[in-house]
Amino acid sequence: MNRRPLSPHLQIYRPQLTSVLSILHRGTGIVIAVGSLLTAAWLLAVATGAEAFNVASCLVNSIPGKVLVLAWSACTAYHLCNGIRHLAWDAGFGFELHQVYLTGRLVLVGTILITAGAWLA
Image (cartoon, rainbow, N blue to C red; front, side, top):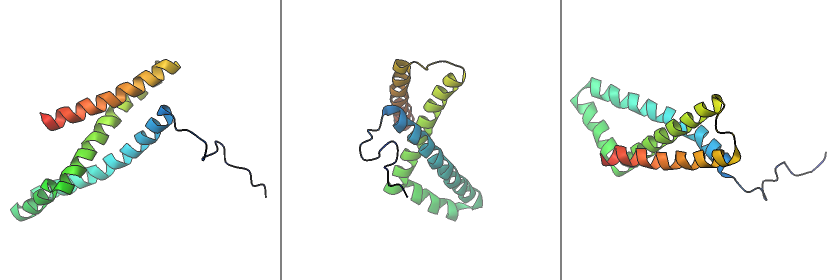
Protein backbone atom coordinates (compact mmCIF):
# COMPACT_ATOMS: atom_id res chain seq x y z
CA MET A 1 0.00 0.00 0.00
CA ASN A 2 1.27 3.45 -0.91
CA ARG A 3 1.70 5.84 2.07
CA ARG A 4 1.48 9.18 0.27
CA PRO A 5 -0.09 12.16 2.06
CA LEU A 6 -3.64 13.23 1.33
CA SER A 7 -4.20 16.04 -1.12
CA PRO A 8 -4.23 18.83 -0.08
CA HIS A 9 -1.72 17.94 2.58
CA LEU A 10 -3.62 18.72 5.79
CA GLN A 11 -0.56 19.75 7.81
CA ILE A 12 0.50 22.43 5.34
CA TYR A 13 -2.85 23.48 3.90
CA ARG A 14 -3.80 27.03 4.83
CA PRO A 15 -7.58 27.50 5.12
CA GLN A 16 -8.92 30.19 2.81
CA LEU A 17 -11.91 32.45 3.37
CA THR A 18 -13.89 30.57 0.75
CA SER A 19 -13.30 27.15 2.31
CA VAL A 20 -14.01 28.38 5.83
CA LEU A 21 -17.27 30.03 4.73
CA SER A 22 -18.30 26.87 2.90
CA ILE A 23 -17.73 24.72 5.99
CA LEU A 24 -19.53 27.29 8.15
CA HIS A 25 -22.53 27.23 5.82
CA ARG A 26 -22.90 23.50 6.29
CA GLY A 27 -22.36 23.73 10.05
CA THR A 28 -24.86 26.54 10.49
CA GLY A 29 -27.45 24.50 8.63
CA ILE A 30 -27.04 21.75 11.24
CA VAL A 31 -27.26 24.25 14.11
CA ILE A 32 -30.43 25.77 12.61
CA ALA A 33 -32.02 22.32 12.35
CA VAL A 34 -31.24 21.50 15.99
CA GLY A 35 -32.43 24.96 17.05
CA SER A 36 -35.68 24.41 15.19
CA LEU A 37 -36.27 21.21 17.16
CA LEU A 38 -35.65 23.13 20.39
CA THR A 39 -38.06 25.84 19.24
CA ALA A 40 -40.67 23.17 18.58
CA ALA A 41 -40.08 21.81 22.11
CA TRP A 42 -40.51 25.33 23.51
CA LEU A 43 -43.77 25.77 21.57
CA LEU A 44 -44.96 22.43 22.90
CA ALA A 45 -44.21 23.65 26.42
CA VAL A 46 -46.21 26.81 25.72
CA ALA A 47 -49.16 24.75 24.54
CA THR A 48 -48.94 22.28 27.43
CA GLY A 49 -49.55 24.73 30.24
CA ALA A 50 -48.11 27.20 32.71
CA GLU A 51 -45.88 24.73 34.56
CA ALA A 52 -44.17 23.44 31.40
CA PHE A 53 -43.87 26.98 30.09
CA ASN A 54 -42.19 28.13 33.34
CA VAL A 55 -39.63 25.34 33.09
CA ALA A 56 -38.90 26.12 29.43
CA SER A 57 -38.76 29.84 30.20
CA CYS A 58 -36.24 29.28 33.00
CA LEU A 59 -34.07 27.22 30.67
CA VAL A 60 -34.17 29.80 27.87
CA ASN A 61 -33.53 32.72 30.24
CA SER A 62 -30.52 31.07 31.90
CA ILE A 63 -27.02 32.09 30.79
CA PRO A 64 -26.44 28.87 28.78
CA GLY A 65 -29.91 29.24 27.27
CA LYS A 66 -29.24 32.81 26.19
CA VAL A 67 -25.88 31.78 24.70
CA LEU A 68 -27.59 29.02 22.72
CA VAL A 69 -30.31 31.36 21.44
CA LEU A 70 -27.65 33.93 20.49
CA ALA A 71 -25.65 31.27 18.65
CA TRP A 72 -28.79 30.03 16.91
CA SER A 73 -29.76 33.52 15.80
CA ALA A 74 -26.22 34.24 14.56
CA CYS A 75 -26.20 30.96 12.62
CA THR A 76 -29.57 31.83 11.11
CA ALA A 77 -28.34 35.29 10.06
CA TYR A 78 -25.16 33.80 8.56
CA HIS A 79 -27.06 31.09 6.71
CA LEU A 80 -29.47 33.69 5.32
CA CYS A 81 -26.70 36.02 4.11
CA ASN A 82 -24.65 33.21 2.63
CA GLY A 83 -27.78 31.73 1.04
CA ILE A 84 -28.39 35.03 -0.75
CA ARG A 85 -24.77 34.89 -1.93
CA HIS A 86 -25.37 31.39 -3.28
CA LEU A 87 -28.52 32.57 -5.05
CA ALA A 88 -26.43 35.21 -6.82
CA TRP A 89 -23.99 32.49 -7.84
CA ASP A 90 -26.88 30.36 -9.12
CA ALA A 91 -27.90 33.32 -11.28
CA GLY A 92 -24.36 33.50 -12.67
CA PHE A 93 -23.08 36.54 -10.75
CA GLY A 94 -20.05 37.02 -8.53
CA PHE A 95 -17.59 34.43 -9.79
CA GLU A 96 -14.60 36.74 -10.18
CA LEU A 97 -12.05 36.08 -7.43
CA HIS A 98 -12.24 39.60 -5.99
CA GLN A 99 -16.06 39.38 -6.00
CA VAL A 100 -15.98 36.05 -4.17
CA TYR A 101 -13.83 37.52 -1.40
CA LEU A 102 -15.83 40.76 -1.28
CA THR A 103 -19.16 38.96 -0.95
CA GLY A 104 -17.64 36.64 1.65
CA ARG A 105 -16.66 39.63 3.77
CA LEU A 106 -20.08 41.19 3.20
CA VAL A 107 -21.70 37.98 4.46
CA LEU A 108 -19.70 38.24 7.68
CA VAL A 109 -20.56 41.93 8.13
CA GLY A 110 -24.22 41.24 7.36
CA THR A 111 -24.25 38.44 9.91
CA ILE A 112 -22.93 40.73 12.61
CA LEU A 113 -25.35 43.54 11.73
CA ILE A 114 -28.42 41.30 11.58
CA THR A 115 -27.55 39.50 14.81
CA ALA A 116 -26.79 42.74 16.66
CA GLY A 117 -29.94 44.33 15.27
CA ALA A 118 -32.08 41.42 16.42
CA TRP A 119 -30.60 41.40 19.91
CA LEU A 120 -30.35 45.15 20.48
CA ALA A 121 -33.74 46.11 19.01
